[in-house]
Length: 368
Image: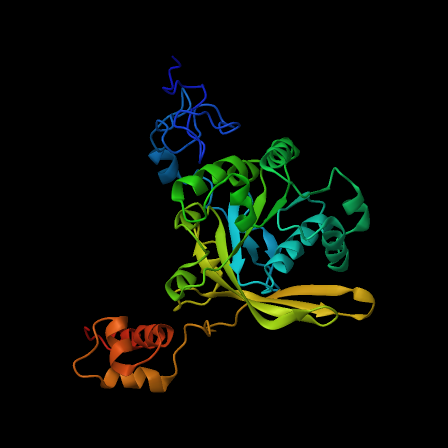
């Protein structure tokens, strides 16, 4: 009988979704002794590593500064995405998610970086390369397999081959389009935290550890509460983000030959490196506006316009009249649902007005 107890430096055995308990997940343990698989024993620290923080180094100021975004530069010089981290780019269909990611890829190729595009949405090699060329990616870089790789895996075996190749290739940007197509390759559900965690540890995390700014494209759920939370499916997606998660919402629809624009808001910024350069006051502050300019001959130019000081997220701002209606309620509403039911508003309108009303209470030194 096989002993499935983890031994430092050895494989961690687990169960693949949809298989009999005790089945080993092929390829799960990319880092011996550290991979986390549902139903398996907890991961063990590498032998000989110190489990305690070096407080002396912290106090001496010798610890490296927190990470800052280095990919996809705004007009003010600040960037949006973190290297060596998993970043999410999510929104509704045709909202500009893929354009944002390909602009980041084109920028990296212009700067002598390396890019891999893992196209699970089957946009196609020709269409993807055409977009990159129109965005200004150097043709010589796209021809060079030492600079650019495109893959359209048909199954998980092919995908894992790509991931293993890329780990030693060390890309600057790795676009994974999309999470909605990635999970089914492993027989996994978008609503299962355990199953997402397995796929994350097998695909997204290795790409980030190879040095890439991983740009994982995802979609919004249909329900109001889920949409306000973030990407569709399990909350484990949000917990797994080591960089930034940007919500992309079309402002001017992207149209061939005419360009378009999209508003970018911060759903999560683990290190705060982007959030600190954005306006305050909103739950999801503005990170910028992605603008695609179209010119004759198919040429495109993109830019990320930074938000102005004090600029609000339009989806969270409430008109003064709504705030006044909340303030006039007697007794004062205790919750968003309370206000919504009494005023017969939709939940978004009530939530925005309640948020603004509470700010006025705080600024006046009153208690709700």
